[in-house]
Length: 124
Image 1 (spheres, rainbow, N blue to C red):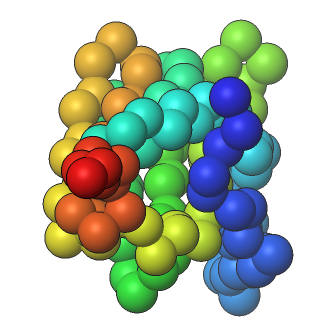
Image 2 (cartoon, rainbow, N blue to C red):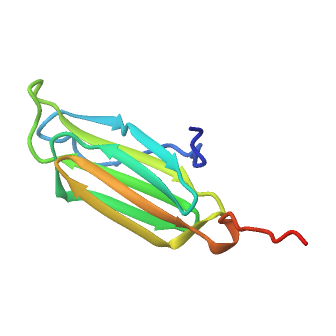
Image 3 (cartoon, rainbow, N blue to C red):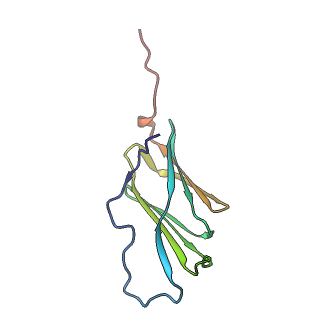
């Protein structure tokens, strides 16, 4: 299935002019699967080691941002900061986004606009 969400050309993170963190950290491009259904887009993202309260999902204009931070460092003593940004197509209703997080997996359901949904055309 071809994803209908275009990857943003913007840098996923902006550098901060602050002191280095006490724990080494790595910024990781968040792996996602995108499913294009008739009524919605479904985005599934794996966030291993991330708690629900450390996940941020934002829609601003046509931009969708997903970020998550590990609360504990991994085996390699590096905390991970997962980031992914998308440009949403016009077929998505930006006010109809639902998020569910369970066992390190984030599911985002983005409803399509009524105008973009398939409809039956009567033939006379």
